[in-house]
Image (cartoon, rainbow, N blue to C red; front, side, top):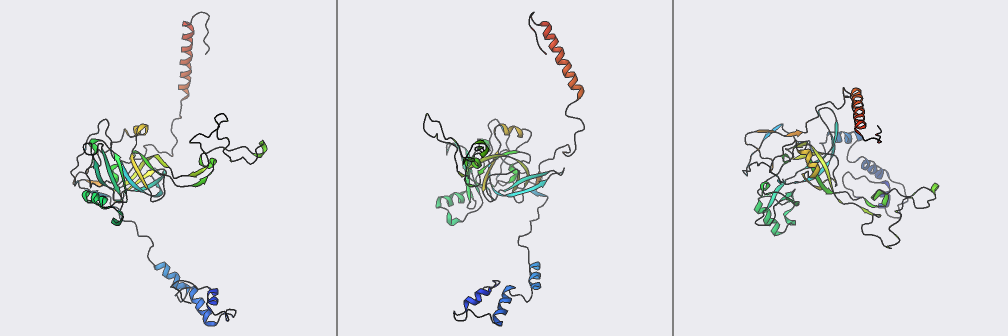
Length: 372
C-alpha cells in the first residue's frame, strides 16, 4: 500500500489491500514491521521524533522590534489648521485583529480590542465644485489587480497607491480635505479620545424571541401555562386584525449594523495598531470604521487637542512610537481618606432647612400652615 510521508498505516488497511482470498489470514511479520514503522513515522525511535519537534523552528514568527522613537517626514506639505465651528475630520478604516488585556501604571487591567490600519491611503478627494459635496474616499489593505475593473485601476494609478481591498467615503469639511495618495496612521487619534466604531455584528443563526429580543417569555407550569414558556405571545390587537410591520418575532439574529462608543487606550505607529477599550462588532479580520465621536459623547473630548486636518509631523522631531492614555492621578486601589459625606455638613444643612421653613411660616398668610 502506497502512502505519503508521515501518514500512518492502519492495520485494517493492510488487510483490505490483500486479495479477497487472503484477507482472512493474519498479518505476516513483514507487514507487522511496516505497520510499526508507519506508527512512528520515518524515525528509528520515538525519542528522535520528540527531539525533532523540540529543535524545529517556531511556528509563528517572533514579534518585530518596536523602537521607542521615530522621525517622520511631511512629503505632501500639509499644514495644520485651527478648527472652527463646523470643522469635521475624516474617519479611518481598520481591520479588527482581536482582543487582549493591557495594564496601566497603577496595575489596573483593561480589556482592549486591537485594530490595524493596514496601508490606509486617500484614494479620491471629493470637492464642492466638481462633485457637489465634500468628502474623502479612503482605501484599506491590498487586493489582487486581476479582481479590479479598468476604471478602478485608473483611479489607483492616478492616486499613486496600490489596489485596495475595501473603500469607503467620509464626509469632511472644506478645511479638512486631504490630497490623494496621502497615508493615514494611528496618530490621527489621541489616546484618551472617545470615538465611534461602526461595523457589522456577528451572525448568530435562528433564534427565538427570548434570545433575539430579550422577551421574558410565559409563566411556568405552576401558574397554569402549558407549552408557552418561550413563546412570543400575542402578535397584535383583535380590532385591527393584522400584524404591524416591524413586529419583533423569531428569526435570524445578525449580522446587523452596529455603532458603539469606544475609548482609545493606546496607539503604536510602527505597525499602525490602535487599542480600543471594550468589544467591537464583527469577526476577526472584518473591517470597521472609526471616526470622531459626535453628539453628547463629543463633549468628553473637549479637554483633548485633536490634530486638524490630521497629524502633521515636524521634520527633525522625534516622536514616541507607543503612546498610552495617561493614568488617573489617584491610586484606584486605595480607599479615599475622607468619607463621601461629612456628618457636620449634614447637620448644618438640616439646620439651614429648618430655619428657612420657620421663616416661610412667619411670612405665610393667617390660616395657612406649612408642614416641615
